[in-house]
Length: 310
Ligand SMILES: Cc1cc2nc3c(=O)[nH]c(=O)nc-3n(C[C@H](O)[C@H](O)[C@H](O)COP(=O)(O)O)c2cc1C
Ligand code: SF4
Ligand code: SF4
Image 1 (cartoon, rainbow, N blue to C red):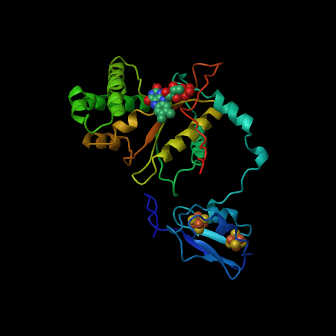
Image 2: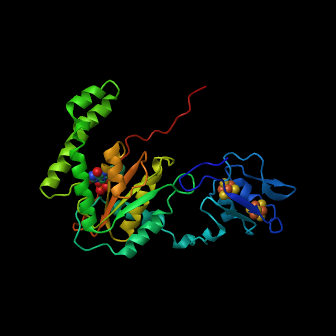
Image 3: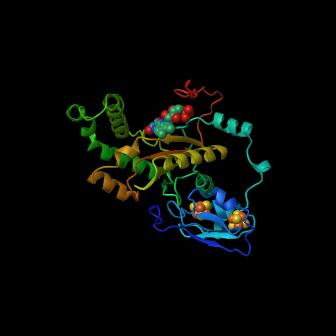
């Protein structure tokens, strides 16, 4: 048995060099697939695995003697690297300052984003926890303002043909099947949004991707957890912030290009390989505005569960 993704259908191949194994049991304790056991004082593969080795690499990364290696599911011993030291890593205060300094930026200078920055953003974003390995997150990149504008113009043209989705008759038809909040969202958010995008584009204003010099669309595959692309996008955003770039997450394109023939041909034009339950754009550029103040944000609720009296 193996968990399928678009990149792997088979389980990882576990190899244990018992001559190097000390029987410390670390690999067994970190393998949540129960693929490993200690038998006669040495690590060996178990007969009670859950899904079959998912290729997370935990065992290989923790083994102090290099006795265990994993191949398959896009992983091999060549993927191991030595972790940066704790003193090199950002401490809470640095990290909090970076997080606090980030504001969504939709106003950019005409300076292009150097391709080396794009590479650094992708390198950092690829470290995100992205569900079951190998990651099924895909990134479609528009790396010039011309490509960004073309995408937005095509999207608006496509939206012109999709206006019925927020029309009065369609919402009335769907009302018995949809929740009240969905109905409200379509009336008060989706309908005006479609109109703002399409009318804006007619006047030459790109309110879809704000004419950023760089845009990345993070999306999953039908196998991926909906959270996977969103977490990767968040990492990309923070990496870009650390490189002095402004960013903004844009969620409106993704749900509109999932269903139907027209959506399929739109995706094909932009080499968007799969439909997915979630996806998000992040736009990047050199900020043309500078904030000196932040705005406090809060969660809708933070509830510590209190045990009931028995
Ligand atoms: C999933 C997601 C989707 C978003 N979609 C859009 C969008 O389509 N258009 C837009 O202008 N901003 C979008 N935003 C940006 C938010 O509106 C932004 O976070 C908000 O303005 C708060 O500003 P801050 O990020 O500076 O705190 C999105 C943010 C998230 C997290
Ligand atoms: S790679 Fe992950 S799932 Fe596979 S044996 Fe090692 S710890 Fe277990
Ligand atoms: S972590 Fe390495 S040395 Fe320890 S039991 Fe597993 S394979 Fe053997």
